[in-house]
Length: 307
Image 1 (cartoon, helix red, strand yellow):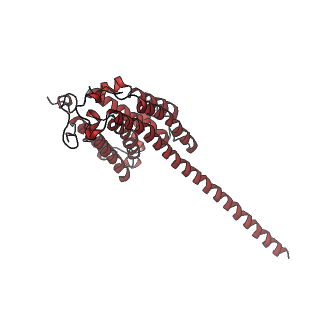
Image 2: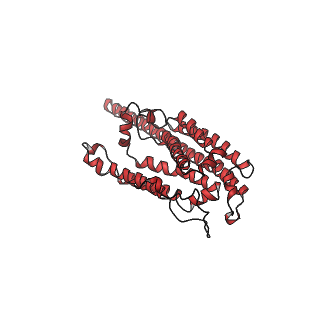
Image 3: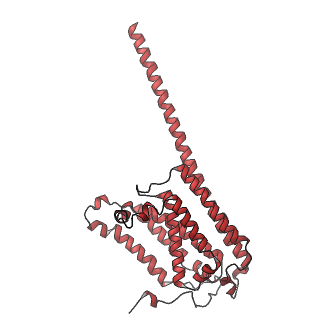
Protein backbone atom coordinates (compact mmCIF):
# COMPACT_ATOMS: atom_id res chain seq x y z
CA UNK A 1 0.00 0.00 0.00
CA UNK A 2 1.07 3.57 -0.68
CA UNK A 3 2.16 5.58 2.34
CA UNK A 4 3.95 8.83 2.92
CA UNK A 5 6.80 6.85 4.47
CA UNK A 6 7.34 5.08 1.15
CA UNK A 7 8.14 8.33 -0.65
CA UNK A 8 11.84 8.86 -1.44
CA UNK A 9 14.05 10.80 0.93
CA UNK A 10 15.22 13.87 -0.94
CA UNK A 11 18.11 14.85 1.30
CA UNK A 12 19.22 12.27 3.83
CA UNK A 13 21.52 9.86 2.00
CA UNK A 14 21.12 11.61 -1.35
CA UNK A 15 24.09 13.03 -3.28
CA UNK A 16 25.01 16.70 -3.18
CA UNK A 17 23.38 18.74 -5.94
CA UNK A 18 25.67 20.06 -8.64
CA UNK A 19 25.42 22.53 -11.47
CA UNK A 20 25.73 26.31 -11.51
CA UNK A 21 23.03 26.79 -8.83
CA UNK A 22 23.81 23.68 -6.72
CA UNK A 23 20.25 22.39 -6.54
CA UNK A 24 18.35 19.24 -7.50
CA UNK A 25 15.37 21.33 -8.66
CA UNK A 26 13.12 18.66 -7.11
CA UNK A 27 10.38 19.50 -4.62
CA UNK A 28 10.27 16.98 -1.78
CA UNK A 29 6.98 15.05 -2.29
CA UNK A 30 6.31 15.02 1.46
CA UNK A 31 6.54 18.81 1.56
CA UNK A 32 4.26 19.09 -1.47
CA UNK A 33 1.70 16.79 0.16
CA UNK A 34 1.80 18.79 3.38
CA UNK A 35 1.43 22.22 1.79
CA UNK A 36 -1.19 21.26 -0.79
CA UNK A 37 -2.99 19.19 1.83
CA UNK A 38 -3.25 22.01 4.37
CA UNK A 39 -4.24 24.47 1.62
CA UNK A 40 -6.94 22.13 0.36
CA UNK A 41 -8.24 21.57 3.88
CA UNK A 42 -8.44 25.34 4.43
CA UNK A 43 -10.31 25.96 1.17
CA UNK A 44 -12.79 23.16 1.96
CA UNK A 45 -13.34 24.35 5.53
CA UNK A 46 -14.04 27.99 4.68
CA UNK A 47 -15.81 27.11 1.42
CA UNK A 48 -18.11 24.14 0.70
CA UNK A 49 -18.03 22.63 4.21
CA UNK A 50 -18.80 26.01 5.74
CA UNK A 51 -21.70 26.73 3.38
CA UNK A 52 -23.29 23.33 4.04
CA UNK A 53 -23.50 23.85 7.79
CA UNK A 54 -26.35 25.83 9.37
CA UNK A 55 -25.61 29.48 10.15
CA UNK A 56 -23.10 30.04 7.36
CA UNK A 57 -24.02 33.75 7.29
CA UNK A 58 -22.47 34.11 10.74
CA UNK A 59 -19.20 32.60 9.50
CA UNK A 60 -18.06 34.94 6.72
CA UNK A 61 -14.83 34.62 4.79
CA UNK A 62 -13.59 37.31 2.43
CA UNK A 63 -11.64 36.97 -0.79
CA UNK A 64 -8.87 39.00 0.85
CA UNK A 65 -8.57 36.45 3.65
CA UNK A 66 -8.33 33.62 1.13
CA UNK A 67 -5.63 35.50 -0.77
CA UNK A 68 -3.63 36.03 2.41
CA UNK A 69 -3.74 32.33 3.26
CA UNK A 70 -2.77 31.30 -0.27
CA UNK A 71 0.12 33.80 -0.19
CA UNK A 72 1.36 32.19 3.02
CA UNK A 73 1.15 28.74 1.44
CA UNK A 74 3.05 29.96 -1.63
CA UNK A 75 5.81 31.48 0.53
CA UNK A 76 6.03 28.22 2.49
CA UNK A 77 6.35 26.29 -0.77
CA UNK A 78 9.18 28.56 -1.90
CA UNK A 79 10.95 28.40 1.48
CA UNK A 80 10.86 24.59 1.65
CA UNK A 81 11.51 24.01 -2.03
CA UNK A 82 14.50 24.28 -4.35
CA UNK A 83 16.89 25.94 -4.48
CA UNK A 84 16.71 27.30 -0.90
CA UNK A 85 16.02 23.93 0.68
CA UNK A 86 18.97 22.29 -1.11
CA UNK A 87 21.31 25.10 -0.09
CA UNK A 88 20.11 24.95 3.53
CA UNK A 89 20.60 21.20 3.80
CA UNK A 90 23.88 20.63 1.98
CA UNK A 91 25.92 23.82 2.04
CA UNK A 92 24.85 26.87 4.04
CA UNK A 93 23.74 27.41 7.62
CA UNK A 94 22.84 30.95 6.49
CA UNK A 95 20.31 29.56 4.00
CA UNK A 96 18.86 27.38 6.75
CA UNK A 97 18.58 30.41 9.02
CA UNK A 98 16.79 32.39 6.32
CA UNK A 99 14.44 29.46 5.77
CA UNK A 100 13.50 29.37 9.45
CA UNK A 101 12.91 33.12 9.63
CA UNK A 102 10.64 33.00 6.58
CA UNK A 103 8.58 30.25 8.23
CA UNK A 104 8.21 32.26 11.43
CA UNK A 105 7.90 35.84 10.26
CA UNK A 106 6.39 35.68 6.75
CA UNK A 107 4.23 32.57 6.49
CA UNK A 108 2.52 32.84 9.87
CA UNK A 109 1.29 36.48 9.68
CA UNK A 110 -0.15 35.69 6.23
CA UNK A 111 -2.02 32.74 7.71
CA UNK A 112 -3.26 34.68 10.74
CA UNK A 113 -4.68 37.34 8.42
CA UNK A 114 -6.12 34.62 6.20
CA UNK A 115 -7.92 32.51 8.82
CA UNK A 116 -11.38 33.86 9.77
CA UNK A 117 -11.84 34.23 13.55
CA UNK A 118 -14.71 31.72 13.63
CA UNK A 119 -12.33 28.93 12.59
CA UNK A 120 -10.88 29.00 16.12
CA UNK A 121 -14.29 28.58 17.78
CA UNK A 122 -14.11 24.78 18.22
CA UNK A 123 -10.81 25.23 20.09
CA UNK A 124 -12.36 27.89 22.33
CA UNK A 125 -15.49 25.84 23.00
CA UNK A 126 -13.63 22.80 24.34
CA UNK A 127 -12.31 23.09 27.88
CA UNK A 128 -9.34 20.82 27.19
CA UNK A 129 -8.13 22.86 24.21
CA UNK A 130 -9.18 26.38 25.25
CA UNK A 131 -5.80 27.05 26.89
CA UNK A 132 -4.14 26.81 23.49
CA UNK A 133 -5.63 30.20 22.59
CA UNK A 134 -6.44 31.75 25.98
CA UNK A 135 -3.12 31.16 27.78
CA UNK A 136 -0.37 29.79 25.53
CA UNK A 137 -0.10 32.75 23.10
CA UNK A 138 -0.26 35.49 25.74
CA UNK A 139 2.74 37.80 25.81
CA UNK A 140 4.75 36.29 28.69
CA UNK A 141 4.39 32.56 27.92
CA UNK A 142 4.69 33.29 24.19
CA UNK A 143 7.97 35.16 24.73
CA UNK A 144 9.35 32.35 26.92
CA UNK A 145 8.35 29.55 24.53
CA UNK A 146 9.57 31.34 21.40
CA UNK A 147 12.93 32.00 23.09
CA UNK A 148 13.18 28.35 24.16
CA UNK A 149 12.38 27.09 20.65
CA UNK A 150 14.93 29.41 19.05
CA UNK A 151 17.63 28.50 21.57
CA UNK A 152 17.15 24.72 21.61
CA UNK A 153 16.95 24.20 17.86
CA UNK A 154 20.21 26.10 17.36
CA UNK A 155 22.18 23.95 19.81
CA UNK A 156 24.79 22.36 17.50
CA UNK A 157 24.10 18.73 18.46
CA UNK A 158 20.34 19.05 17.96
CA UNK A 159 20.73 21.20 14.86
CA UNK A 160 23.02 18.66 13.19
CA UNK A 161 20.69 15.83 14.18
CA UNK A 162 17.85 17.46 12.22
CA UNK A 163 19.99 17.32 9.07
CA UNK A 164 20.48 13.57 9.50
CA UNK A 165 16.80 12.75 10.13
CA UNK A 166 13.88 13.78 7.92
CA UNK A 167 11.44 13.20 10.81
CA UNK A 168 13.42 15.41 13.18
CA UNK A 169 13.88 18.03 10.46
CA UNK A 170 10.13 18.15 9.86
CA UNK A 171 9.57 18.45 13.61
CA UNK A 172 11.99 21.39 13.72
CA UNK A 173 10.09 23.22 10.99
CA UNK A 174 6.75 22.62 12.73
CA UNK A 175 8.22 24.08 15.93
CA UNK A 176 9.31 27.20 14.05
CA UNK A 177 5.80 27.60 12.62
CA UNK A 178 4.46 27.29 16.18
CA UNK A 179 6.99 29.88 17.35
CA UNK A 180 5.82 32.27 14.64
CA UNK A 181 2.20 31.87 15.73
CA UNK A 182 3.07 32.45 19.40
CA UNK A 183 5.15 35.50 18.48
CA UNK A 184 2.51 37.18 16.31
CA UNK A 185 -0.69 36.35 18.19
CA UNK A 186 -0.26 39.03 20.92
CA UNK A 187 0.20 41.53 18.05
CA UNK A 188 -2.44 40.24 15.62
CA UNK A 189 -5.00 38.26 17.65
CA UNK A 190 -8.42 38.00 16.01
CA UNK A 191 -10.22 36.53 19.03
CA UNK A 192 -11.79 38.53 21.91
CA UNK A 193 -10.71 35.85 24.41
CA UNK A 194 -7.08 36.91 23.85
CA UNK A 195 -7.20 40.52 22.67
CA UNK A 196 -4.20 42.18 21.11
CA UNK A 197 -1.83 44.03 23.40
CA UNK A 198 -2.27 47.77 23.67
CA UNK A 199 0.10 49.76 21.41
CA UNK A 200 2.52 50.69 24.24
CA UNK A 201 2.66 47.05 25.39
CA UNK A 202 3.19 45.91 21.79
CA UNK A 203 6.23 48.20 21.62
CA UNK A 204 7.58 46.84 24.92
CA UNK A 205 6.93 43.25 23.78
CA UNK A 206 8.83 43.79 20.53
CA UNK A 207 11.71 45.54 22.29
CA UNK A 208 12.12 42.66 24.75
CA UNK A 209 12.12 40.20 21.83
CA UNK A 210 15.35 41.79 20.56
CA UNK A 211 17.30 40.46 23.56
CA UNK A 212 17.25 36.69 22.90
CA UNK A 213 17.54 37.21 19.14
CA UNK A 214 20.61 39.37 19.70
CA UNK A 215 22.23 36.93 22.14
CA UNK A 216 21.70 33.81 19.99
CA UNK A 217 22.68 35.65 16.82
CA UNK A 218 25.84 37.04 18.41
CA UNK A 219 26.87 33.61 19.72
CA UNK A 220 26.57 32.14 16.22
CA UNK A 221 28.35 35.10 14.63
CA UNK A 222 31.38 35.04 16.92
CA UNK A 223 31.69 31.28 17.36
CA UNK A 224 34.59 29.62 15.58
CA UNK A 225 34.00 28.20 12.09
CA UNK A 226 32.36 24.77 12.10
CA UNK A 227 29.86 25.42 14.87
CA UNK A 228 27.58 23.10 12.90
CA UNK A 229 29.84 20.22 11.75
CA UNK A 230 27.32 18.98 9.16
CA UNK A 231 28.38 21.71 6.75
CA UNK A 232 32.06 20.76 7.02
CA UNK A 233 31.21 17.53 5.17
CA UNK A 234 30.29 19.34 1.96
CA UNK A 235 32.71 18.45 -0.83
CA UNK A 236 32.50 21.97 -2.31
CA UNK A 237 31.90 25.47 -1.03
CA UNK A 238 29.52 27.02 -3.60
CA UNK A 239 30.56 30.39 -4.97
CA UNK A 240 33.60 30.38 -2.69
CA UNK A 241 31.62 31.17 0.47
CA UNK A 242 33.73 29.85 3.35
CA UNK A 243 32.39 28.15 6.48
CA UNK A 244 33.39 31.20 8.52
CA UNK A 245 31.64 33.69 6.26
CA UNK A 246 28.56 31.49 5.96
CA UNK A 247 28.28 31.19 9.74
CA UNK A 248 28.76 34.93 10.21
CA UNK A 249 26.00 35.63 7.68
CA UNK A 250 23.72 33.21 9.55
CA UNK A 251 24.40 34.85 12.91
CA UNK A 252 23.94 38.35 11.53
CA UNK A 253 20.72 37.28 9.80
CA UNK A 254 19.30 36.39 13.21
CA UNK A 255 20.98 39.18 15.16
CA UNK A 256 20.57 42.12 12.79
CA UNK A 257 17.78 40.80 10.58
CA UNK A 258 15.37 39.79 13.34
CA UNK A 259 16.07 42.89 15.41
CA UNK A 260 15.57 45.10 12.37
CA UNK A 261 12.19 43.46 11.89
CA UNK A 262 11.25 43.88 15.56
CA UNK A 263 12.34 47.50 15.72
CA UNK A 264 10.67 48.24 12.38
CA UNK A 265 7.37 46.84 13.64
CA UNK A 266 7.84 48.72 16.90
CA UNK A 267 8.36 51.99 15.02
CA UNK A 268 5.28 51.51 12.83
CA UNK A 269 3.09 50.63 15.83
CA UNK A 270 4.39 53.58 17.86
CA UNK A 271 3.93 56.09 15.05
CA UNK A 272 0.39 54.87 14.36
CA UNK A 273 -0.46 55.03 18.05
CA UNK A 274 1.12 58.46 18.50
CA UNK A 275 -0.64 59.70 15.37
CA UNK A 276 -3.97 58.40 16.66
CA UNK A 277 -3.43 60.06 20.03
CA UNK A 278 -2.53 63.32 18.30
CA UNK A 279 -5.67 63.15 16.14
CA UNK A 280 -7.76 62.40 19.21
CA UNK A 281 -6.31 65.41 21.04
CA UNK A 282 -6.89 67.60 17.98
CA UNK A 283 -10.51 66.44 17.69
CA UNK A 284 -11.01 67.06 21.42
CA UNK A 285 -9.60 70.60 21.15
CA UNK A 286 -11.70 71.29 18.07
CA UNK A 287 -14.83 70.10 19.86
CA UNK A 288 -14.04 72.29 22.88
CA UNK A 289 -13.52 75.25 20.56
CA UNK A 290 -16.83 74.54 18.82
CA UNK A 291 -18.66 74.40 22.17
CA UNK A 292 -17.08 77.67 23.32
CA UNK A 293 -18.07 79.39 20.07
CA UNK A 294 -21.60 78.09 20.43
CA UNK A 295 -21.79 79.37 24.00
CA UNK A 296 -20.51 82.74 22.86
CA UNK A 297 -23.16 82.89 20.12
CA UNK A 298 -25.85 81.88 22.61
CA UNK A 299 -24.76 84.61 25.05
CA UNK A 300 -24.81 87.21 22.28
CA UNK A 301 -28.30 86.07 21.28
CA UNK A 302 -29.50 86.40 24.89
CA UNK A 303 -27.98 89.87 25.24
CA UNK A 304 -29.62 91.00 22.00
CA UNK A 305 -32.95 89.66 23.18
CA UNK A 306 -32.70 91.55 26.47
CA UNK A 307 -31.87 94.78 24.64
